Image (cartoon, rainbow, N blue to C red):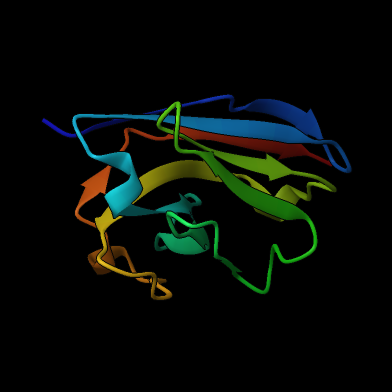
Length: 125
């Protein structure tokens, strides 16, 4: 049974940093591309970043240069390091997994079969 568990969310002031973690279990981790999405109140879930098993990454324009996605295949972990946070980054952040024979850029929710429960990130102004 695939399970994704996020952690690391919290309250931070604008300009601050947070590091989100996602622990994956029940999967052969290296066969999955991993992604981070977020959903703000009243808005649709939106793509943030994705990483292939070999480390190839892709980011939404809104976070490029501020966020970094990474993974540790030995630990079945994926991370999202967030710097220069803005109030508009406030959202529930979700980790997602997609089985992949090779990396392609997956930026829509329907591309991912497995999801975590989410972790709240609140950025105060």
